[in-house]
Image (cartoon, rainbow, N blue to C red; front, side, top):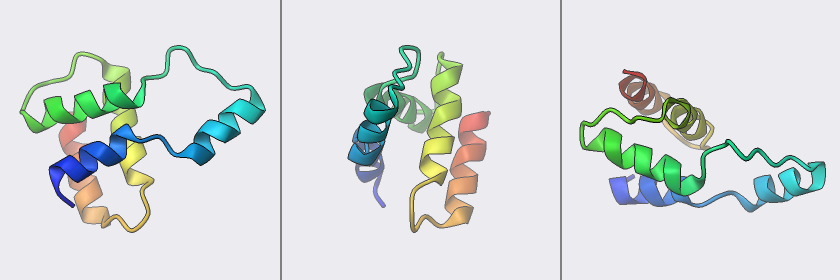
Length: 83
């Protein structure tokens, strides 16, 4: 998967999650937006250290939940982001 594909995938919210949160009445004002997660991804790819640690922690959690992702790639990325 190319970087721009990963960035696009991070930017798009799963409609099932949106509907589930709507039905359950879950609205976390402090949760990062999809665009904020994509911005963290770009910062990390540029070798910068993201300022928002919540976004930095949520990004690896998001990516490791993707189906058909090779675990060794996910582990490498998550380790890199955690630095």
